Length: 56
Image (cartoon, rainbow, N blue to C red; front, top):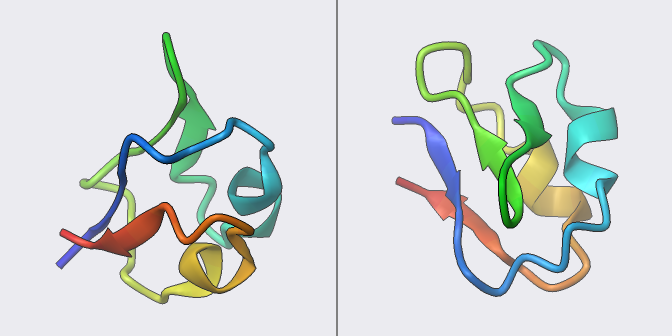
């Protein structure tokens, strides 16, 4: 199951730099995870300073 970024995202970009498959990009109001590309490794959730990333 792909990870998702919730509304507590502060758009710091920490997650995007850590994603091994480049599934995370800046969206209109915050970062977003492409569910089709996400491999559910959880690396992004581990580096998020505000715990805004969770399994979808």
